[in-house]
Image (cartoon, rainbow, N blue to C red):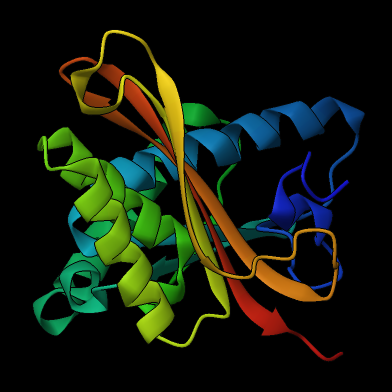
Length: 216
């Protein structure tokens, strides 16, 4: 079972919290869900240089709390907090375009990613960027594995799929070190999938990082 579904979704509510935390009735649910997706995509583009890992969104009746996890928080906050104010204005303008009726109080928090080499999203993004620059896929993957294992991971798996190295026929290549037990729910497995747009087409990058068992 663990092989066939998203490892984070498999452990949702047991090890990982929901990244969107709010309640809505049937009429408003789809509107708020689309708003969350579009907001995440917009922040992904806006905070590309800061190394965005994830965005958590909490909603109440007239307030929205947005928690942004980044590798370089100084880039987001800016000198004297000016960057944070600009980002808050950007989010406010974006939400007004999405839903002009509601007036929300926006609270924005920036949290640092403590260990970027143990964050599957950051590792996958780094691999995807290097593949787009036409660097050798084996060297890129092996270097990423060494960094992850050097940071204390129990195991790491990287899967590349597509026209790797510009090949005529697409293929899949897997790189692994250590153990990545996907069927054990209490095993803390971080997962991410990021596409890399190369000159030959898209190469899919999937990363699993096993950090050991979490004791409740």
